[in-house]
Amino acid sequence: MGLGTKIKGFIRFCEEQKKEKNIHMYFMVSIVLAMFMEIYAFLMRLNLLNIFIFISFIFYLWNQNHKKKQMNYLIQCCDAIIEQKDFSIIDGESKESLLSNKLYVLNKRYHQSLEAVKKEQLKLKDYIEDISHQLKTPITSIRIQTELLLEENQNKKLYSIEHQIQRIQLLVNDLQTIALLDSHNIQYCFKEYDLQTLIDEIEEDLDYLNPQIHLNKNIKVLCDEKWFIEALENIIKNCLEKNSTPLSIFAYENETTLKMMIQDQGNGFKKKDLPFLFQRFYRGENSKGTGLGLYIAKEIIEAHHGFMKAYNQQGACFEIVLPQMKMKKKI
Image 1 (tube, helix red, strand yellow):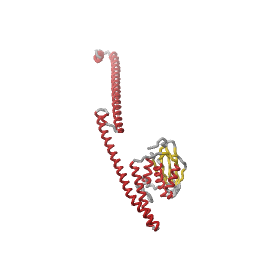
Image 2 (cartoon, rainbow, N blue to C red):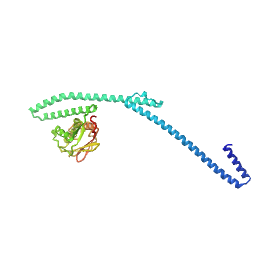
Image 3 (cartoon, helix red, strand yellow):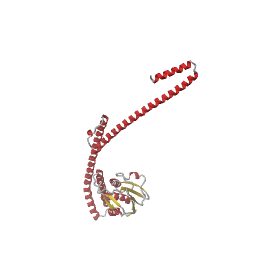
Image 4 (spheres, one colour):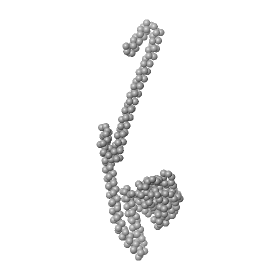
């Protein structure tokens, strides 16, 4: 006999007791029936809850396993992109294969675009070098002739011509440097140098500007000598051409970084110039340069895996931060 039949029989028994006006018995039986129904309902809810929890747990395990497979597949696809492998060798479900095809196409187009950019950069480099070469020959000839004329005749116009020639020569040199930096074909040779030794070389190169440079502390710098000197010279020239004041270089180092602060004693930067100082061809008021020196300096410092910024601090201040790369020789 089923549980439902027993309950129906129990209910009939209660109705009979009610008809016979056995109130006491009817009341007791009603209480027992109510308690039974509550217990039964609780047990049913408990059983349904357990079933729900069990099903949810099974679904969770399945979902996690499916996600793990998808993640492993995506990792394989990413590895294929990085290593430029054939995507067809990767097994996957239909949707994942579709994703693989899309990633393959995306990867192919990315590398095609990258190659196109590299080709354009090389074309631009060659173009700038051609222009520079074409300009250098007549500039050199004009300069020699001007110098000969100056020896014979102290004419102010000739001095003006010579000055303009020097500016053109400087611009040509800067354009050649930018073309080389943009090509990313420079093989940097990193060695340790005394900072004071590098500054002594810079003072000799910039002797015509009569630099007075004070270094607070001589430290070792891991750098490419030629290019690092080029960067520092451009920064120092920028300071000296604006203000003929002594320069202070403050050097600090710890286990991970090396910081240099190049500071003059002038009036500092104008607020409107600060956001644009490192842009190509940007020249502030009364600038005597080509507008390329600071841009070149920034590119060189970044090629050394560092960064630089400019701000006002009792005058103009350039801050250079480089990583300490004791174990690296070439980059």
